[in-house]
Amino acid sequence: MESTIQSREIAPRSSEAMDSQLSKLGNHLITKFHVLMRISQIYDSKNVALQQFIQESLQAINTFIRREGSLCLKIMADDIFLNERRLRYSVEGFTSFKYLLTQWKKRFIGEILYKEPLDEETLGTFIYILMGLEEGREENAALFSEKLKEHHISSIEVGPLEVYETEEGIYPRKKEDSREVAKKVFFETIGTVKEVITHIKGRQHADVRKLKRLIRKAVHLIMEDESILLGMTTIKNYDEYTFNHSVNVAIYSLAMGRRLAFSRSVLSELGITAMLHDIGKSKIPLEVLNKPGSLDLEEWGQMKKHPLTGVEIVLNLKQLGEVNPKMVIGIFDHHLKNDLSGYPKLFRQKRVSLFGRIIQIADAYDAMTTPRIYKKVPYTPEQALAVMLKERDVHFDSILLKMFIGLVGVYPIGSLVLLDTHEMGIVFKPNTDPQWMDRPQVILIDRDARGKGKKERVDLAEGDGRGHFRRSVMKTLDPNKYHIDIGKYFAGKDGD
Ligand SMILES: [Fe+2]
Ligand SMILES: [Fe+2]
Image 1 (tube, rainbow, N blue to C red):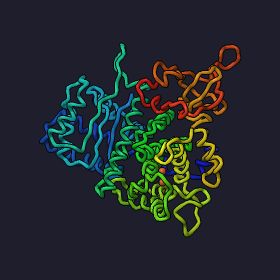
Image 2: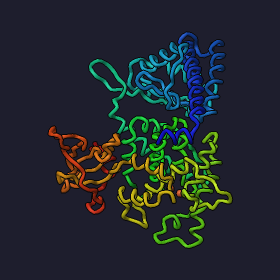
Image 3: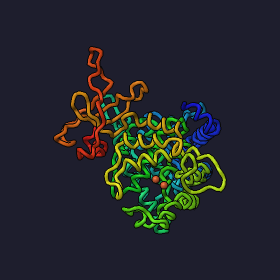
């Protein structure tokens, strides 16, 4: 099912072509950095040969930044990631790769981000600070940042090498830490969306570069383990609905995009589109947005304009770089409904775009499962899916909806379930084997402690050694009735 959708809807060739173009560019860049680092160790900063080489390198670096909005090089284990995409090195590029990896690792530098095009002086200063760092000092990234500040360089950010130590030496951070990283990305993204929306409301300049960077991180996390970010969507922040909602819709959309085998660059576009799908609402007065009762005709008219207003806003966000038509159309389409009975009204019939159809599902599911001012008790995940299934074809693309249900599971992440052992549990991670969709991993909770105390994680696919399952779901429960704050299990330190 997934592969047919993929071959129909996206052109893998073009994305592959893009990837190979990126890896060529990447190799070119790494070679430039290699030579720069080497030369800087031989010559002083005034040397003519060095100056000339800086100029040449700048051209490659700045062309890339202008095209992609920023340039981020990151080391993870023995790989270099260029803007969150792993670079495959060419045979000729191997020496440069190795050199950069070794030199950065020795200095505990793991990530460098160029946020805007550089000038000669900045690049020169940067290289000399980098190579001047004493080897083996873990605090180098912080020192580096300080030195950049001293030189009034704000267009470059530096991050430490992610490491943990064992007896045999230093290794990149363990995979289990993904949950901590995801949490950071999740909350940082909410904050950034908030900033962007507030700026747009105040007609101020909105900086979306950070948002783009965070989306690339989210794409990376989704590729690694989708259940971690999906778990974050259960953190329903009542006061920050708009921002929280934007991020959740992006997470669900990314997870769907991943199942549709989108490339990383298409995933990033989808993520940004989903994140900004309701940006048009920033122009609607809060009294209308948060009105507890039903909207009158005029208010409803205002509300229906938000997809189109969103398109206008996005087209004006210069830092988004080249705005792909897919993104604009996705925002325009997100309330059209599958049978086009939604809004805006169209003059000419068309099919809802793939981005639009994905966001429609993510949007509806998140809206239904989140408490709102006018609906304090939300649907449980199961109820929401049931409502959506009833409206399939009319409202949603039924194939994508089926895929979405497969994604959140028969028992979606965050569902409260009663087990045949009379224990209560919260679904933590769906079972990826379609045959065992009803056997997710759950956290057992103590009914009296209401989420406090020790939480044991169990796998419902686990047998008892005598051909039976140890535990099975009897039914789902409504967490609102038991006053259980599901989000706490995914946000808190003791969540896992
Ligand atoms: Fe909307
Ligand atoms: Fe929405």
